[in-house]
Every structure is written in structure tokens, then in C-alpha cells.
Amino acid sequence: MKGKKKEGEDRIETVATNRKARHDYEIISTHEAGLVLEGPEVKSLRQKQAVINQGFARFDGDALWLYGVQISPYAYNSLTEIDQTRTRKLLMKSAELRKLRNSVQNKGFALIPLELYFKNGWAKLTIGVCRGRKAHDKHEQIKKRDIDREIRRDFKEKFKG
Image (cartoon, rainbow, N blue to C red; front, side, top):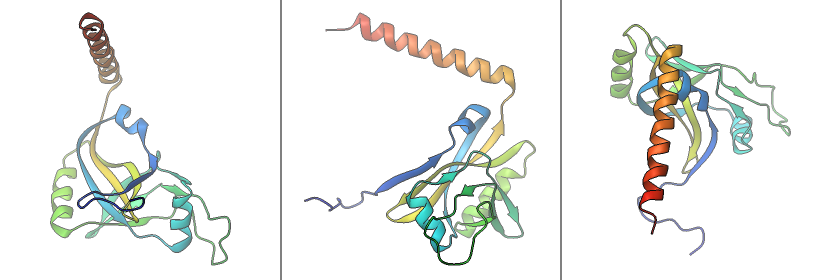
């Protein structure tokens, strides 16, 4: 049964994640979007040659565009050269775009790419509606995470069989 997938199960292959975004921003909601890519870019993504740490998304007219994401050039590209940090269009349903536009219009919110992956062979991007964290918020989050970790560790030791 190798290679067959169960019904309703998606094959997801992660290309790049933005771990720093989860530290620097408070993520309010996440949304999945498709990407408009050219052939060599897809081949580079399959080789996991992408950096999304400096990226952000912005509305330009009715469309949502991705800025600052670097997809390295494919080594065996014989076609025209493609700029590795070019702006790329994000594909979403219009109702979801309207909802996203309304949530971002509030001051202090930004659209940040969180994860770039292939889902059933299609390049997808998870973008988050985020609000920036202050330095003291970051420290509080680290303290809370450490306390939770210690509580779990003590609980595990206490009830160890």
C-alpha cells in the first residue's frame, strides 16, 4: 500500500517556516493562500531553497501580494533569469480576502508569512494576521512557557508509574 493515501488525508511537505514570527508577533488568526509561481521557482521550492523570515503581505487594489520572500534561483534553469525576491500574488477566495482586508485595517496589524509548504503538490502559504509584541510581552511569554514546562515535568515525575 505504499504511495496510496487515505481518503480525506492531505500530503503536506514543509518548505520553510518563520519561527521568529511566533516570537515577535501575537498571531490573531491564520489563513491558507496559494502562490503564483513560475516553473523554476517551483523546482527551487521542491529543493527547500526559500527564506520567508523577511516577508510580509499587503493589499494592492483587490489583490493580495507577497513581498520580501526569497526563493533562490534554480541551479539548472535554462529559461530567463527570475528575480529571487520579486513580489508574488497570493491566491485566495474573494470572500476570504474581504474578511482579511477588514481585519488588517485596524492599526498595528500586519500579514506575516508563517509557513511555506506543498499540499497535495500545490505550493501553499500560511499567513497570519499578527500584532507586534513589545519587549516586556516577549519576556512574559518566555516566563509563562518555562513555568508550563516545569509544571508538566513535575506532574510527569509525580505520577510516574
